[in-house]
Amino acid sequence: MTRMRLQRALARAGVASRRGAEVLIVAGRVLVNGTVAELGVRVDPTIDLITVGGRRVKQTKVAWIALNKPAGYVVTRRDTEGRSTVFDLVPDLPGLAYVGRLDVATTGLLLLTTDGEAAHRLTHPRFAVERTYRAIVRGRPADDIRRALRRPVVIGRRRVSIVRFGVRRAERGASDVTLTLTEGRNRIVRRVCEQLGLDVVRLIRLSHGPVKLGRLAPGRWRYLTANEISAIRAGR
Image 1 (cartoon, rainbow, N blue to C red):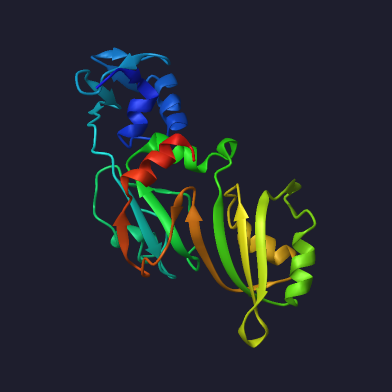
Image 2: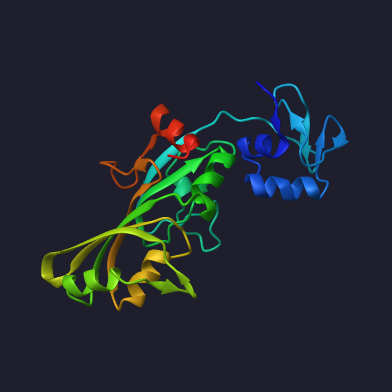
């Protein structure tokens, strides 16, 4: 393995995101071959002894998982209320972490990985990665929703980065709204709907970056393909 920046090695080992790894290094908690590390140092994780807080960092095999999250599951490792979590549905892999949250009622695509650096690229606003959602809503006619979405939607004094949308009539007076955003603020799609006076009946994430939910059944998971992983790393 070629040498890489220490923060990248820590991120790839699932210790923290690259930014989180930088914080650990600056705090003096990371040692390389027994010496307190500094930002910018390059390491070979297959040769160098890296420790964080006295514990050796072991490089894990990079894994990427796509899960179709069902409603009622919490996106966390452990829940203080004893609710089921998404980690009950996927393999128990060292360093596995979720990539962006979905609230307990929202279903659809959730990515999990041991590659902290690539996960950072999928979630940080600077990279403007697209996420597509489908919302079944009530409260306004489809034509009204379409007109409202043609105007800027501002949440928390910041314009929501909606890059595409589609609206069509659904059954029983509901509307079927598809939104593609390049941001992942907390509950942002639900907040957009609230801003427009819409009640969300169902919310599903259909894609995150180059990965699509497809026909994956609720509660089921799969490993990402090599092409999907390459597209994530290439920022496509």
